[in-house]
Image (cartoon, rainbow, N blue to C red; front, side, top):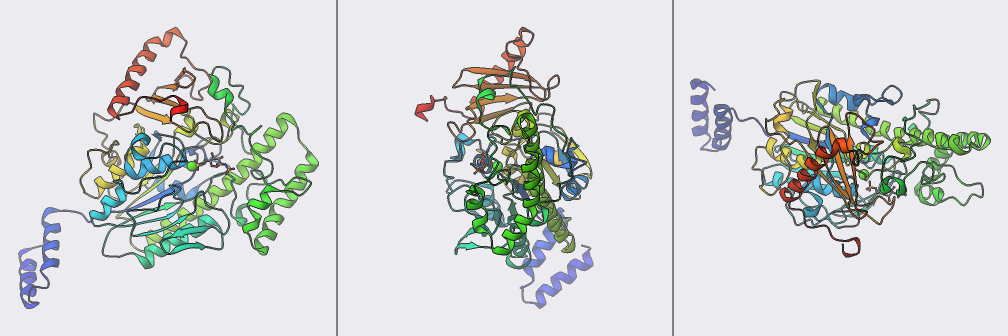
Length: 526
Ligand code: SGN
Ligand code: CA
């Protein structure tokens, strides 16, 4: 503002009897000190979205199942190649995102625990910093959402078709497909319900592509004629690993169900799939669903594959449905990006795309997550923030879902609470990784005994190595990720690695102290 303009403002202010003073002060402040408007934050979170299923990450599925809208975010922003979760399961990941704390300090170590909504969270702190906050979609933390000006969340895991939502006014059932409805609600809040004078922070949280992998009716057949490349270790025998990998219950071969998971009803017609999915559908939806699956189920029954051929068939059907769900997520990401463009919001909005954790798409013969092995431990992270993030940039630093809370507070220009345990990604987004950036990450999975029977473990990972401790079994595993990226052979007992093992054990101990881990209790005392 030049002197002439300044004088005119003072003059106008006098004329208005002082009513223009607030406007004047804030304009002067922002012009003189070059303080930027607080950016909006749009956090798009999916459930169980494997990085292997995002074409921006390359990999064996990129050609056959592209994700153009999520990729667009990467092309216009930054792709993080090394984002990991603190605890690879749903509710714990969500609690870590909200609090910036490891599971033992945020009240949710496994899916059975209730989130303590009275504790400090980043949405509450953003509200104090002048933000409008909203959450739409999967919540899964049991207690009522706190720190949000607007919330409409799925009940528990939620349903794919005609889902029910918890709202402050009570439960409501919507007609349609869950990813479309969540996006409709998010866009409606942006367009009609928020206070436009404030910056916003919106958490748009998809249910898809969670088990039982049910695509929108328009997407059920889109991959019928695609043959998905198999991972090299689809028929893993788990030699070279310990008891935990051998005793899990998450294989495509044994655990994946023909009926609910793969949508092939039993011949006697007593279908759980029918009870669980169809009972929510209206007649029109059921008809479309049966028309989509019926012919391919008939073809399967004629083919009647056995043994390894059956596993291969299951893998193909699993990916048809899983990637069909991803298509729905990707299309809806596109709708949201278009909305930002059309409403002049793109430039001042940080958009994050990530998932609560990774997932196995047949690697090691598995589906599901929980293990600290790469496919479930790593999660996608893509960020777009025009004017700050250089288009098409790649980051290879160790980052975590533990970092999101501090990142959002940092970009909002508000103080970072000393008890949060992550690190702000703001400098990384600007392309400037601090010299003292972390060299290792701590991991801890707690949910056992439970579905999929993955044993409790903790671990430490660096860019090259990963040390896992299945402490109830007193078994350790060590992976050299450069030599063995698919983690097929533990080097823990290899004397050539004894020095590395010792260093990583020390590092694990250092991190336990740093993050204030309590001593591990025997299973029967937890
Ligand atoms: C359900 C699924 C499991 C899944 C958990 C946790 N079974 O129990 O396969 O591991 O949720 O998932 S299902 O038959 O109900 O689909 S999480 O993402 O919420 O942690
Ligand atoms: Ca999940």
